[in-house]
Length: 227
Image (tube, rainbow, N blue to C red; front, side, top):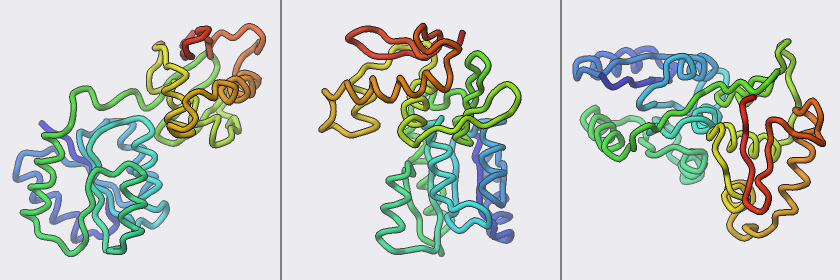
């Protein structure tokens, strides 16, 4: 059965969506705030998420970014915000579709079917990756020690670590890392990677000069070994 995560603080709308989706044999999980949504998604990964932007704790764009950090499932945004900038922000954060409230139920159902058809198999990776004495929580965008303390990373350091954590044990090329973090114009700037990985190793590795987790494949790229 296809699992759908509904995230909206409008109780009547949430109830109506749950009834309609359940009647069409979808398994539905609901959350009324962003923090709960990310926790539920990490615990039981959905096949598709429907996210409202106006949540009480986190902006919906932040929730989209949190989901997109570890999963490629279809994400549909529902929002009363109908400005071009709101739509651009949501789509740039990783949403696959944007529906403006009020909307017709049949239209939403058609968008869900279309999004699921476009989805590729194995769209969901692990939400939490354990590396030595550290835990990488891709949903919450946190790196913590075994004692629960947060390790502070710069946005660039986190982005690089996140890419490797989405593919644990697999080689990720210099070009892919540069393209995803800095853009296609920087595909040959491998010195950027050397600097930031040196900083990451100082924060993660027991001995940064002999890395166990952030391993360099000379001339090719980097891999995250779980150790």
